[in-house]
Amino acid sequence: MTNLEALKSKAIGYPIDESTYSVILIDRGVDAAAEYKGRSKDMELAKADLYVTLLTAANITEGGFQLSMTDKTNFANVASGIYDQYGEPNPIRKAKPQMRARRMW
Image 1 (cartoon, rainbow, N blue to C red):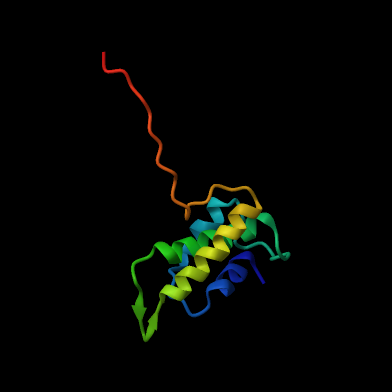
Image 2 (image 1 turned 45 degrees about the vertical axis):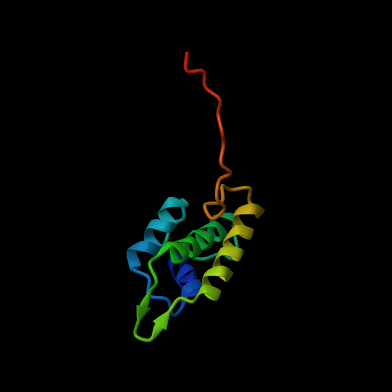
């Protein structure tokens, strides 16, 4: 099994474009054609990126398929856990608003 096939197995049943998987793996520095060697930091982060992609996609309805709010919540929780585990920036959490004081004169 290749890294690409392994990543695809994490989203069986969800209509995701082939290029999306490739971009996720490339962005994480993972060779899509290389043999999958099991869990690794880069593959886990690629999985989290895949889940964020599903979360940020428009509501998908295709051939009877629909991504529910429960699915989105589950994807968000799993992805957040992976980002936190590896100390990566978490795109799901909203940044806290910051206020800066400036002198106008």
